Image (cartoon, rainbow, N blue to C red; front, side, top):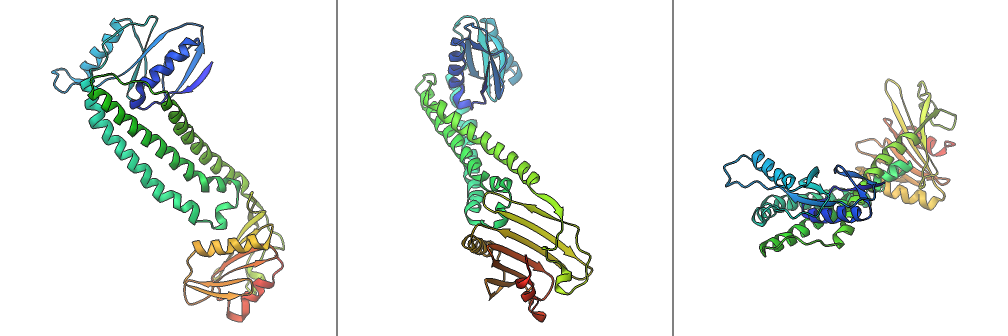
Length: 350
């Protein structure tokens, strides 16, 4: 038994026919065709035919009546209709029977109007999505993007996803143009075996990107663990403010970050959030400090030992610094310059 991807574009309808007939020569056949198709080994040789139905607008018959007559033409000649993949109709017979296929003029009209416009729109969409998503992969290197292995997969998934769309849609556009040139010369589309490789590449890139996205979401959820708070977690009480400590905090790790935790606490007036990242070296910690500042635009920065006080208003209420291979980011509603609160943050035993 074989499991094959058969969601061929209309421009590759003859490539699908070639694929089905080759599998049948090896004894593998199917009774229906869809996006994914199961081929069972029965050691029989059948003949497959693929075609595209294009209604004739000059006909007095409705589109449905034209389609039914078109299908009956194949059935009357001994073919069995076994399914449809997108725009492609697939037929099967025990003998290699000659049958009149869709007129070249109708096919040419379809590929010139509907298919060409669709391809241009799809190529534009792929390029537009790439313009929106891919730069973020290289620009947004904030440490929060890499706190779990799942978040790493999600960060890089747009690269594979956009690449799969570009390869598929540009290939479909180019193949459509070739078919148009062939039909203009009053000949039937020919099979190009090299198209099979681009079909496999684009489809598996797309499947891989979907699997990466699903795996990323699942791993990100699983790897974020909720654990009880310990004494190494800074609280508002350590800064001289009364507060009931939160009972838990979020903890994780990844290939890029040895340990990460996030803790949030608040009372009626004040709030405190800590993001802690531990790396192999101070060099990596300082690099991620720079990456964080590049992706988070604070209005004011005040340099301190191993880091910065940060502010988006009149008060410096946030701090980022490196200490013993750790990158620590503390965001509060406090004025950290008041009573040198920031010194307590720097001196705390994390």
